[in-house]
Each structure stands twice: as structure tokens, then as C-alpha cells.
Length: 186
Image (cartoon, rainbow, N blue to C red; front, side, top):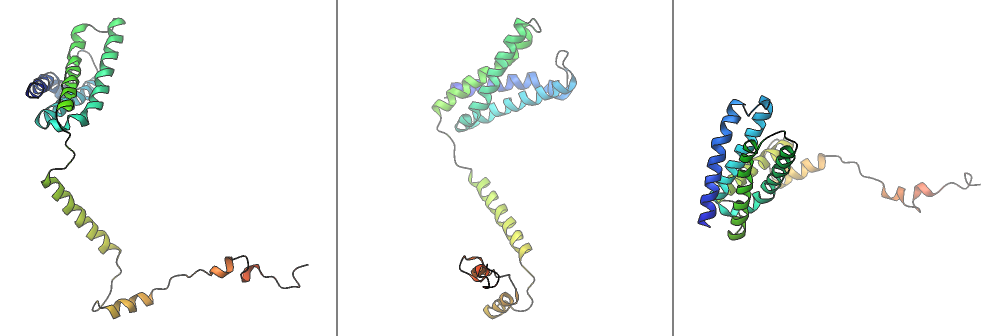
């Protein structure tokens, strides 16, 4: 596992060295600035994901399918562009880093047990935030009640609320709505 983790760090660092300048300066061999920024953002994000997986190998499984699809599409588009003579091997070689990273992720995913649980600090923070949000929502929905809250005052408040009560007998086939006076039938 150590060799796969070290290899993944090396791939990530190399990818960062290649793509951070593209992300920051928007220059990638004749690509428009917007496209260069997007490619830089994607490749920097993948490199950071590689670093996360190297640090916590149990997370490699979560990245495996996304990076696998990206690596496969990069190989296909590189092959198409090379055959059509729209690019050369030196332009496409950096994409092999994503392929190498995917292979290392695959190895880590096979070795390391998956990490399913959340770290305690994150879990506690999410729980506290959820509790605070729930308290605010409940408080916003409650009507203002004056005076002392006791069982009697709550019963009085509940009795003062008028809710429509449907007449269920009117909807039954043998209910009053279905009965017609004899004069009307005929």
C-alpha cells in the first residue's frame, strides 16, 4: 500500500506543477483562456483528489469511477486527435497522469478498507448545525402564545383554533347527499 500511496502523491504533485499555471494564467498551447481555465480547474481538482486518497486510502473507492471515466475519455479523445493530426504526443502525454493516477487509485481501492464513517468532529458539527436549524424552524412555525404555558393554557389555545371538519356522511352512497325527495325522482 505504501508504494501505491507514494506513487499517487508523485502523480498529484506532477499534475499540480503542470496544471496550476494553466489554471492561474489561462495559457495552454493555443486553447482559449476560458477553456484553459476549465482544464486547469479540472486537473487541479483531480490532483487534489489524488492527494486526499493518498492520505486516506479508504477514500480511493469513492474516486475510482469518476477518475476512471475521465481517464478513459482522455485516452479516447487523445487517440482521435492524434489520428486526425490535430495534436502531437507531447500535447497528449500529460493526460497519462490521470490514467496513472486511476491505476494507483484502483490498487489502493483493492487494498484499503473503505472509509464509510464520518470523522467524529464533522459528525458532531453537522449534528449541532442540524439541531440549531430544527429549533429555528420549529420556533418560526409556532404561534405566539401569551401567558404561562401549562396544560390548561395549551388546551385553551387548541380549542380556540377552528379547523374545518368534513362531513363524511355526505360523501357516502347511502348518506344524505344521495337521498333525493320522492318528487325529484321520476
